[in-house]
Every structure is written in C-alpha cells, then in structure tokens.
Length: 370
Image 1 (cartoon, one colour):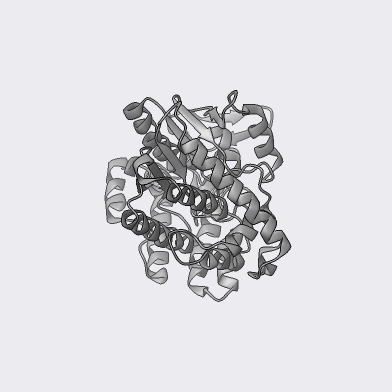
Image 2 (cartoon, rainbow, N blue to C red; image 1 turned 90 degrees about the vertical axis):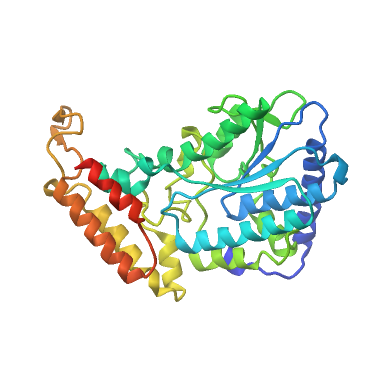
C-alpha cells in the first residue's frame, strides 16, 4: 500500500487488520499480567508509524486491565538527538503531551520520557568542537553517541532498580532482510514472547507487531482512533508530506543498520550518511519552504568532508595515517579554521531558519577544545 494513496474509509483489508490488532492487544494484556515476572516495560517510541502502533496497543491493553492489577509500570521512552527533523520532533512532542495527559487522567501507570545525549557527546560538540569529519557509512560516529548511549543508559537504570526490564519495540520482520535475519537469529525464549537483548544485560525484548505487514500497520492506524484521543491523521499526513519512513529506535550497534539508510528518512536533519534527505525535501516540495536552508547546510557539510584544505594532516592522536593498499593519506579532523567556518555558516543558517539549531551552552563549550 502506498501511503500517498491510503484511504481512511473502511474496507475488508481494514477489518482483517483490525482483527489482527485485537489479537495483538490481547497478547500484550496477557503478557502484562504475567505472574512469572513483573519487570517494568519500556516502549521505544520514535513517533513513527510502528512505534506509535505499539504505544497504541499497550495503552489499549492497560485500559482493559482492572486498576488493581495495573502493577507493572510502563515507560514510553523517546530519544532526541538534538538535531532531529524539526517537523518530526514537533509531531513527537505533541503526541507525547497527549499521551501523558491521557495517562494521568485515566490513572494509568505510564511515564513519558525523552532521553538526550550528554552535551560532551552531542553532534555539534563532536563536529565543531572536536572536528570529527561528518558521518558517513564507514565512520558513523553519531549513532552510538546520539542514540544508543542515552536510551541504553535509561534502560540500564531501570534494570538496576528492578533487576530486569522489558523493552517493547515496533520492529517487524517485513521491514528489511537484515531486520528479518536479526529477529530470526535472536529468536524467543522457550514458552515466552521475550528474548534477551544482545547488548543490554538484564534487558529482554518483546516485539508485539513483528508479524504485521506495512499495509496492515497503515490500515490499523487509519481505521482506529488512538486511545489517548484524536486521530492518527497527523501522523499519516506527516508521512505523505515527507514521502518516507522513519529512522527506527536504535539500542545497539546491531540495530544501527536502520539508521541513516535509504529506507530511513525521518531522522537527523544533519544526517550526511544518506545521499539525499528525502524527508526534508518532501516537506519543502509540499510547501514548507522554510526547511530549504537546512537542506542547503546539510548538503554543504557533506560536500566539505573530504576537502583536504578543511582537514588536518595528523589525526587527533597526533599520528599521520596512510592506507598502504590504496596509496592514500587518511586525513585527520577538521582544522580549527574549518570548524570556525562551519560554526559561522550554522549560525547564519539558524538566523535564516528563525529557530535555535545550536544552544549557547554548546557554543560556549567549544572554548575547551581550543
């Protein structure tokens, strides 16, 4: 199903998807009420279609449980890299606010939280402060620092407090061959929906929508109103405008393949791993011209990555490195002069855009790097 042609009218396929969704909600309810463990649940919530459907299902399941039995706490955890696509973050924050208010009004044991990278690991500190070259497929330093570390830290804190934690992810085997292989490799524990997380000790993973197709996900979102109120129309329109998919929740390097690929377009507006930012370009094409300056800046920092005049000869450890097989010099970080140019161009882009793109605290921290 093409999202651009998605009809919000009922259909036989919508009815079939609705039945599947009812089974998923029932399975989540049963898992929630499991008497073998009462570990907290952590829902990885990016605000995209799959994680929204998981949050929807969990919310529905909780509403079907008697208040006296809602003893397991649910954390709906998002991650803000601080360079996320502005439109996507606006949608995420709006959805989080509605979920949090509804959970409070309905007295559901839900906490809504957003993790962020530490200042010293943030994108601008690494790019401008330390001079790291812009990320690419072979040097994707951003994913671990901006995504994996902040979310993993929150999960491990929950594990330490309760002995274990269960992560609910909106991964589906249809998403890609690599995702399917990863899911099949890990499998599930015997007689359980849970499997151990490959990189987080004490964390278990639950994939409630793993068998849904993309068509079924859209059918459910189009035909079912979210239990926290409103509709999913805003999410559907976001995808239509962007003509793309979202960067997934990433909790380990094994899962990082989905971040910054041609199949993931909702991600960081600064992402230089992808060849073209299809989501921001889609927004511009749909009439949101204010994002043109962000696209221009992103394209520029991608273009200067391998400019020898912008890079130091030696690497940060002082070594001069050569690739003997290819007979080429491996340059070091951006020069002090290049980093000044990047900062100046970023501030000019910020002035044109009209909203903050870099905080004063981050700019002040650059002094520590000389």
